[in-house]
Image (cartoon, rainbow, N blue to C red; front, side):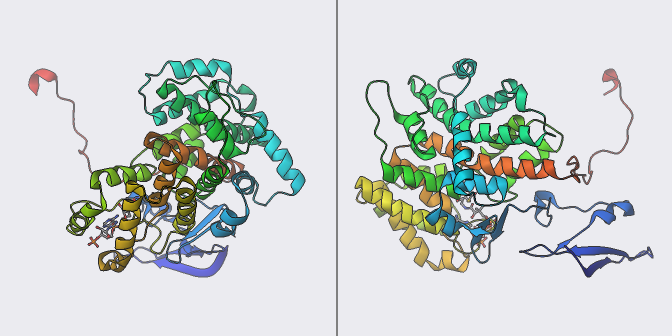
Length: 429
Ligand code: ACO
């Protein structure tokens, strides 16, 4: 990892120079190891981690300039076309693709854990019916730690594995029950024999009154959404999970922290914003006026642009194909909302404003449309993102805990508050 390149820090006040080693990853830019810097009595200042690698990781790699995303070295395009979500879960957790036997054992392990403790169902009932499903998810996932004392020893690799399997298995159930509670539907149960995505659709939409038939095209589209959202290296929620876990907190509490972070509109809420924007624009005739507003910076074109990808988000290209498949399957190509989305996309891709700024549609532009076409309400978009990302979060958590060099995360600060001062009694203020 270390090579013989160094970065030398020189001071203009006569202090000795400081050499800092340059570390080389397998892919991506080199990284300056600044750990020796703390001995100088100063700190580095980097709000938002714009120039800081917070950890070493072997799970996911993004090249934003080239528009590439790899899970454990495999390009996302290949995984989306040839693999499926549960195999991707195995890959992210274990580092390698499973053999047929490993795959079967893994699937069985996940299936065995997909029910929720009956007592947990009472917890749902403590929420108001109109609670946002993300609020329910933060609470219920955190509460799992009160139910599984048998897998909370984070220093035991077998416990870590069981907790990971429990989380991957139970998250779709928890998300589906949060939706059903909100709708006033009776709670549902998983049905083994269905795939992971089929089971989620079944738990969301089945009723006790009639047999629910899963539409295979829609289940495959959902499986692809799960795969595309499974991990995205050190984003805000993953970093939150790592920081929470660095104190030794249990995995259920750490994933609840990740869900809380994902809830923010700058992170997991973008596909919801795309649908709200389409509703606001209303119809294709209003697109030119809306685009004028975008160029005058009155509002943004939601679902376009990305902090890391300055090229086509590879997940967006895959999601666009899935979007076409779903709209065709459901005969929705002429639906006014989806026609509007396609008109917006076409205009934006040809407009110099977007071309010059390297603004491409991101995965959320299409995933919002697909989820909406499947009949999933907007309030469930972020919970679906959370259930898909759980495997990424728990893989990063497990990688960190297994590292013997793990330290509690403890950033420092540039203090700009008051100097030391003496307390003034109230009557003298
Ligand atoms: N619509 C219109 N203009 C945009 C958009 C957009 N969606 N995104 C960026 N721009 C413009 C900016 O106004 C800026 O213009 P300027 O150079 O004239 O000042 C230029 O493009 C660069 O924009 P930045 O804000 O510097 O880009 P940054 O990389 O910081 O932001 C972000 C990325 C936050 C995602 C932004 O593109 C955005 O707000 N997009 C819409 C929201 C969205 O879809 N978010 C989902 C991201 S994907 C995800 O989180 C899973």
